[in-house]
Image (tube, rainbow, N blue to C red; front, top):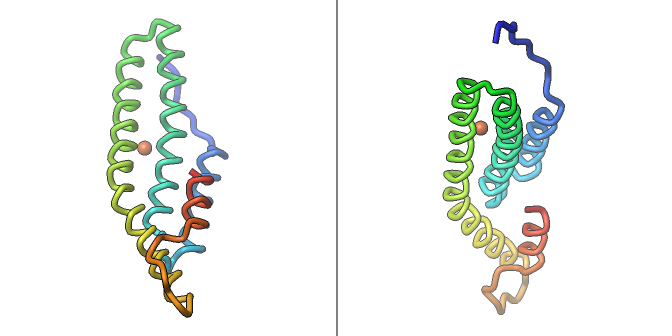
Length: 128
Ligand SMILES: [Fe+2]
């Protein structure tokens, strides 16, 4: 396109990276750490998907066929990564729930239930 590529810091992505660091800081010894990190990574992927999808559409409108192809390839890769993270999350989420259940049971003097704590499950789904 005869333009020199320039970059500038992306405030949105910096914010997502900071959120990921917060997950790490707040859950470093929790069974939910992996689930939290995967969720943070998926936020990054979704942000990328939105960006690549938009510029791919702009390229289509401008009739830039080569750019459309390249941007579509990258968009597809981002979507594949998101799908892989969803698969990985299934196991990590199950471990987080069973881990938080055993943590909760350790805190209760008379454990009568092996059900995962509903409060934690609601809190997680509210954030998703
Ligand atoms: Fe990505």
